[in-house]
Image (tube, rainbow, N blue to C red; front, side, top):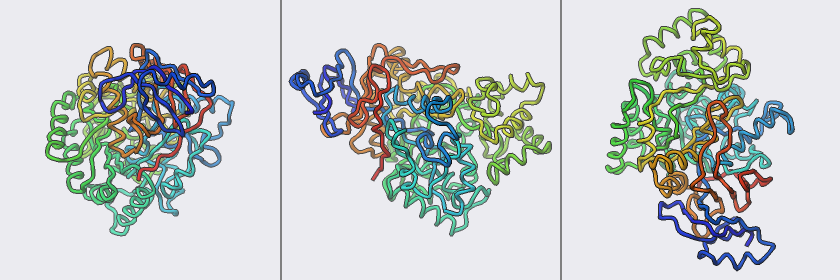
Length: 549
């Protein structure tokens, strides 16, 4: 025995009622002991003990939806864009890396919304690098040809928890055919299918799309079906950011269901929401539609974050034609007055098939989260910033993107509380932060989602029993993404554990101070090593890249 967790109330991740139990850890694996029997091992002074008396012990949480692909990846010349240990920039990245762990997340699933750091044909690597710089914003992180190269590029000394990754369709498409707004040629589609097949065989966890983001938005349904069939052959899910989560959300959901039926792939609807004033209340229809599809035999689930605001890249607020050809082409267009006029007209009038976040809400609902060239803008709303400068919001946005070379993220306050609560309570939903971990003022969901579900929604609001909330964070996502040995505390399971105070756990992160750690998370164990003790990180670096077979 290398670690004893003694005296806790075990919530094992299955949804079963909590029960007293001790846990023994050896070789990074768990053995469940009868309550009190761990006292025999406690007499051995060489065995470290975590005293969980009065606390809950649960499996380590699994964040099914992150954009943390680059936080521990090797880049050239450095993954932090020049940051070195000990300086301010490095400290900011360390704070971002620690945020999930401090709330109990022991496994993250990246590569969501169609953006991953792989795969790519060798000749497309330089072109893709610029796109990924803007997407992930952690210095010049280079793309990888396949999942194996991506896994090899992770730096163990920076890996505090585990990381699995999906294959992003946008990256895959750009890595084969660039940023052209056209259907793929047969040989290009074959190449995309081949790269996807290789990455899934190497251990990638599934296939994701982000159908509001160029170049993913340029794909039609048939293209996605062809690729999802590859995922289906591997028994891995099709994970989708729908083509529209606003006024056309129901139509977009039908497209996702069609893709799942035609391809045979399990369907995971990412961060399910009905955003913008024209879609508020639509969860009253979308959730029953998902339930009916599941009753009809379709393997469909969804995930959700516990906030009424989302976060994404600023250039996604512009019509898709503006980004054709990639970031360089976008920035060149934004210099031209006639382009800005066309953008204004499209936001006001809409474009067929485009989500149009601003048209569904307004610039007053969109705040700057990260803008390297204008740090003073972070935390402020676009309408406010434009008014202070005496310019039109579209001109302000275009200039901001030009100043920051496209690397700007935003927070969009676009949802309604009753819709969020319905999705959280649905038996089909699991928890994902959708964290976008960039320096600046990121969305507080990166540091607060799991504690917020347990504390605010579970305990304070009574929306979810503790056992159900933990199941949504552990056993359900582990089963969905085939994370063997994780998500449930049972004999032989990987020793990823969270020890928390059910009466005290709550999120502390706010939009003003987005990385404040949660309260009530006493300890976190990663692969048998204590990574958080008394709410503070240790020196443990036990995380690894998870290969899903």
